Length: 160
Image (cartoon, rainbow, N blue to C red):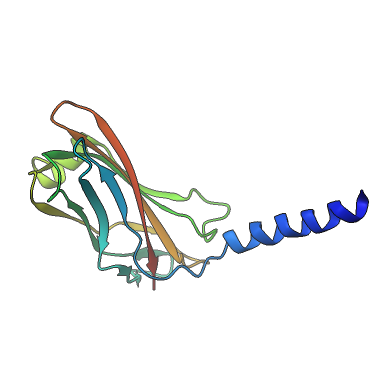
């Protein structure tokens, strides 16, 4: 029995380590299925974010969070949070920005994405980056339709 369990443990550990690869590349999209089977898409623009140091301990990146509702009805951006998922923030909070509906309304006015269109929301978050440089960021987004039904989505992007 011991001979069988060793390969199983080795396989499980190798799968775990492969899943933790922090060399994320490309564009990752999340799709929201509407009642008719049509989808909304949330993505970053540009697909790879550029990191700019503001000082020795503060960095900033600028990007658009794009909500594509061309195949669904009206949606509202209800919340957005941004976090590092690659382990670069060990010892710190991975969440570096959180925006609630009132904050988003202050930043963008009404957060309506009219069905059949897409809309970009510009963000320029600042965060501490003294001894680390993040490699991957994830946006967790909550959208809701006109009935108030919330839809949660996540999208990730590499940072250079």
